[in-house]
Image (tube, one colour):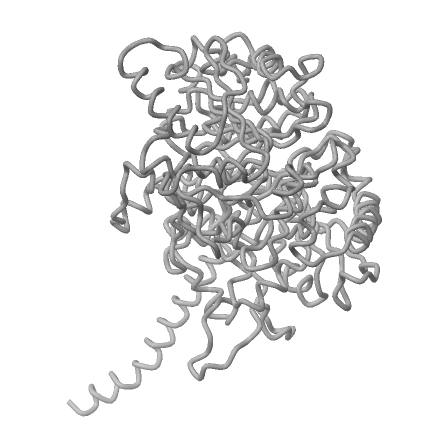
Length: 614
């Protein structure tokens, strides 16, 4: 008996050793599975690996803080691969994921559209995997051809082509999808509809840009964004806005076409744009109940419109004669009258209201008139996660006295210091120096890219930390558009960006952006990772998010400290990225010490296959 017991004890270390070897092999297979695929591991939630290395926002047990970029030692782990998400996640938008809402049993008010608002997964539920392109994905068709035609394989959805066939939204054309320029209210083409709006407003030569005074537009419920796409030829740029609703993929189609667009909804939260950003708001049968909750949604549009701004509304209520439409029109007319809007023109199926130039009408209303003026201390430019309010945003005293926004016409507007610089205590000289500095920086960027790109290679660009928008301004001669992103916790410079005639959004880079996968050709990240380090969010999560929104064969320009660049280099193989160039950044007043410029290109790859060498 004793001899058999001793023999059993002697075998235990061997058994334990075997178990350890098996475990190590399994771990190895997990992180280095063939071509990044890891079967069911591809659906693993969270950033467990980054947390185990101390790279997430999870401090040590003793409360000490570490950089999210690790120790910098040579022994830091270099990943060989990430798992690939399941095919059903090829169009994942993490903070607009209906499945997450169901899984977490969120109690949301569907009548208020809360289910279409942002609801981000907690860290432990984030997918730590690469979003695969759909099978057969091709490099997108180049602008300007892309306005009218895209590859079906890139967005394999033809539902809208059949549902909206009588409205000319889009046509299923074999391996391509065509966009004839129609819409719910402009079946015969957006170009004719736009010219009609300009004619209603008596603009010279029926040109919607009104000699440069109308530049920025908000298109609510935009469909596939043909309205915004056809505005571009008039030097007018629209933020085409729609939720991820029953017309799924409408914003995805817009971005594939090379048209500025954003996933969002008029629900309970303010849209992520500052006050007085748009000269025109547009709704063509956008199916929005403007009368609900004391007109709160129309008051959100009022917040976003500039002095003298227009709201073009094409809907049955504006012309139909049945009892319900007349009832809605009567109530809506009463509401806008109390908001001090006036009818600029009403013709056929469209009405255009105009917002007052100053506060005189607001001050002359009878006491107790609803909607009330917003209370003092209500910051109309505070928008990230801020609930809407059913109140009128009056003009600041200076804007009231001047009776307008004081902006120059486009294109002079791009480089003319706007009046609202004073809100940030920024001088015109500082603004002009910033513009000049970024012109030089962008010229250097393009010199580093010149062997990799052609004039039409890049169309959709995101500046992940845009400041005053001078990076975008420096690209004015190129056929591109820029989504200028401003951090939610920084100075409210986004209003300066809109005052320059550019587009953008507020965002928090600890979370996923409100866009589809594969929508941008170039991402510019100026000290974005360094800022993330100060907040303790996961740099690995940000890398995965950048990979999600970047098109295959697209580029990333990282301008940051040397240790950030070294950190990112460790992930190149895992993300199927390749280094294009690494150089020292030129010194400037805005630059941190020892900044580097790192240019990266994303490879085109398919699940189960090697990255495409092109």
